[in-house]
Length: 248
Image 1 (cartoon, one colour):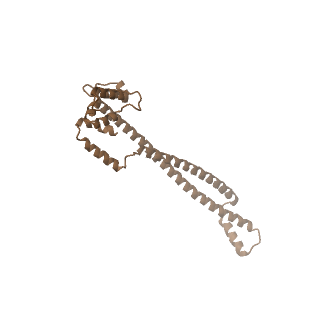
Image 2 (cartoon, helix red, strand yellow):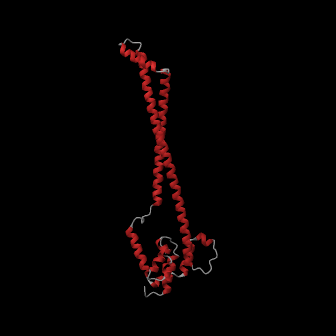
Image 3 (cartoon, rainbow, N blue to C red):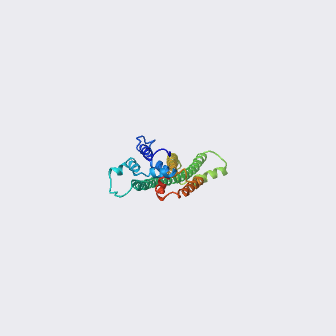
């Protein structure tokens, strides 16, 4: 490395930055890492021509609509645009998270609503079944009155019939129809509840993926980054201009 002149190293870096293959060309992160490897590469990687080549590659929309940037170095301009783009991206991610959180809250409300409806419909079915059983007992007692039975049993059956103030047959038909409707309604509510539960789980998974960060809970990696940042302090202040960019 020491045998190569600066002109050759500059040409190598320029070819790396201007490489048409986006997978192999040098990015701003590569230049930041090179600047930390040695004082010589730190000086060469800060060459304005390199950052001037990166500007139209990484920010084509901004370069196509130029503004007045007199006396601003290409590296500083790149950093400024990068920070603005980063803020825009963070704001977009926050909006996406808020939209998914809103969906989670909406699905949770609907799940609770269907759960309450299922409980209410279950209670209604229980009441209808109980009334049906009572009316069937009354109908059986009515039929049994026409048959000879001991006086005690006959008296109980007559008491059941006298306590029923509604026409038994018509009320039985109405209750049976109501029971069918309640069961159908219960099936519809259960189907809607399961569908809404699936939507809620999908929204929760999407929210978890949006909030996931692979380094968020790794204290070892965080401590390594802190130690690495401490070692950088021996370099000039200009070498730290892009510290946040290299870690982004």
